Length: 116
Image (cartoon, rainbow, N blue to C red):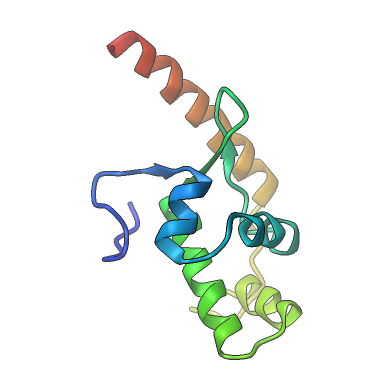
């Protein structure tokens, strides 16, 4: 779990309104950033609502900080694609990770209905 003092400790996923409030960013800006940054891909819940992970919210904080520094969106995108530890481009199959994350969220929702 990503630790960040700006996020509630026991919450794993956030709806777009919650993220907008936490990051002081409009919902429309968040949806726009989803089109510009391939790393920002919230999963969709059972009713199609966006569910941002803790990692997504931390990424949004980073994007917001870089835009405040005056970086262009393309520069931010390039910076996010570079692994800060090695300087190499990421070689992870991002689409596969999103697919797995979506499946895990669906399983979590199904299990939640059994536990209620």
